[in-house]
Image 1: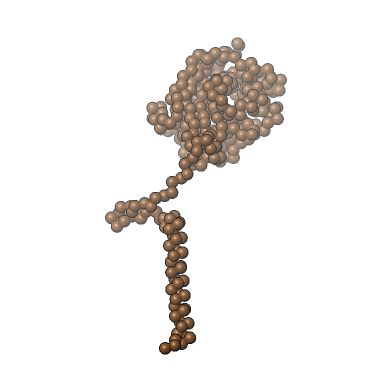
Image 2 (image 1 turned 30 degrees about the vertical axis):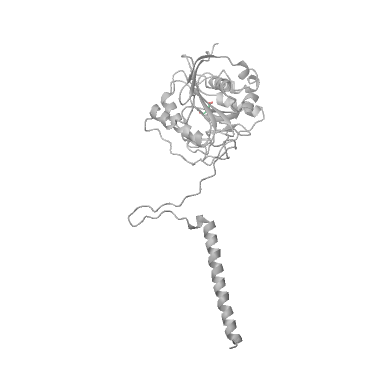
Length: 338
Ligand code: BGC
């Protein structure tokens, strides 16, 4: 019997619907199979309170250690809690930083560090502060993915303290060990409160301790360059290093500021939030009284900077120790009369 045209049309429509449904399910199946993340959920507790088996998460692409480290480092966490109420055991700090090489050297494993940074700390009788500094700074510097070394320049003898001369010594001695291209000069009692304040060098000399608790988290004056600063090798050499003849407390950082400005450089700074830092409270050290000549000295940087600095530096190394978390160099820097 001949089929009616209406019945034939009905059959054709049904076939088309079935075909479409099949096509849709095939598309859906291939989409989901090729995109496993779309199914991924965080594990839910099973009725017995056990986690359901996790679906495999895609493993991150391994870094190539010859690839430059990303800038900024993806390991940074931002603001940090910094406090000094608990005592810190050196043994524990050493254990926690077992990846640091003797002498306080560290190189990132997964990428090539953008800078080779020597951190220079002028020092005398501040072992308690140094423990806190190492406890806080080593993990920060590692998260900043720097190729770094820590140099504690210890003034031997009983003469008046000379911060800037110790920093000059640190520059010279660190370069004997490694081809550093950046120098961070830090007081031993200053701890950054945010790891985005990277201890590295910039196009212009960098002042890092811009927002200290001691000064109500602001600069005490616009020209202030004390605490922690970073200069590239070229910037440091351009100003003939730091002055050698500021004995006692104060003025040497102002002289360094003058040197930079006289050589037409500008000061670069992080913002006041990222640049926050805490100072460990302490009484004034012996043999580091305020230097009464500092005001007169600061007024003459223009004339003195080419005569007094790296080119006139003289000192004697008494002892070099490559300790687990830092290199300690004890030096005789002479006396105000010598
Ligand atoms: C001194 C600096 C010191 C600053 C802040 C100035 O009077 O010359 O050396 O860093 O005060 O204390």
